[in-house]
Image (tube, rainbow, N blue to C red; front, side, top):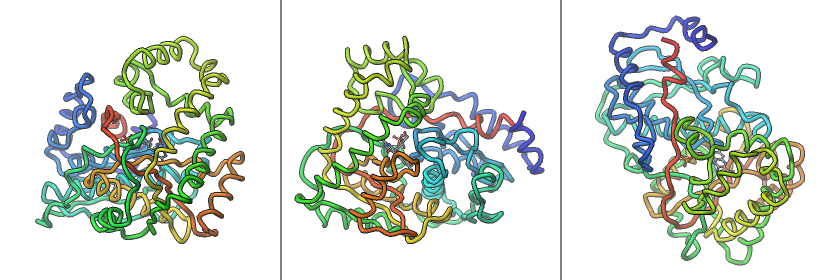
Length: 390
Ligand SMILES: Cc1cc2nc3c(=O)[nH]c(=O)nc-3n(C[C@H](O)[C@H](O)[C@H](O)COP(=O)(O)O)c2cc1C
């Protein structure tokens, strides 16, 4: 009801073709059995309307807790307004909604790269109704996205849209070298953020230790850890809800442990989740993974405003596509960058360690290495954020 009002108030023009395209989007449900990205997400090849096709590429973007907190107002066959969905925010871990806007930047990057793969140039008008504060999230758009036909050539990164994923496992091999990093940066073509690699064998462990400690704080702050539980999915819920996080994309191998943990979480999720036993297990596994990293990459902006968050997200996702192209994988470790009270001490320690002073801000801290692909995460059918209005 609310969403219907949202769309109608805008006087949106929806053409018959678009309606048809949207309807067929809903019919072609994904195959919940397969574990690759294409079969778990809306497939751009199934859309004829250019704007829907490009939005379907955008939906593959990494985003905090996979809440997919975005919604769209269709304008015509080549244009849409793009908003954060204020009903899917993460108030405990992302109290100022910075990270979701980083995720929006990632969406825009994939919208652009995806559009190039079918002969369209993407145009992005950022914050078309001006900068906004927390109260206007979901009311004012992040961007006006439009497409122009023209052979601009396929972006070389487009072939990685369905290979990229967040890989939360133990990483193998050698530390990432400066030359390897330079190659990734060359492919990324960053436009906004300063991107730095930490790969010094002497100092890397202390950077990793600090990033790990962020998880200790998260697990021991009941409200913050509870938010993760609410977005945690087990067993059949994973394919039905198609959002949130789960053990399978978290790197737990199929087998008895996975079955037992998921079964126990189904029985009494809250009690188990916050138990000393479970927290100890989570932290032990996390420590091993973090310390196996082959480098840490940080994404920094000179100021810390809405536009910095969005544009940094674009560079992050282009970097991710480029890294996967070069055989690397990534896993953000965002805890120490988050703006909630119990994290303040580590937040400041990390800034000091990285020699960053406000208003500059590290928007992303990401471990890098080599590992094997995991099960891919799902994306909801976009009719959840768009077509239910029709
Ligand atoms: C701004 C931002 C912060 C994130 N922080 C974390 C994090 O701290 N730990 C983590 O494991 N994943 C983190 N992620 C990754 C998301 O959880 C992931 O993108 C989402 O679950 C979808 O999975 P996918 O990237 O494999 O498609 C972050 C992503 C974004 C965009």
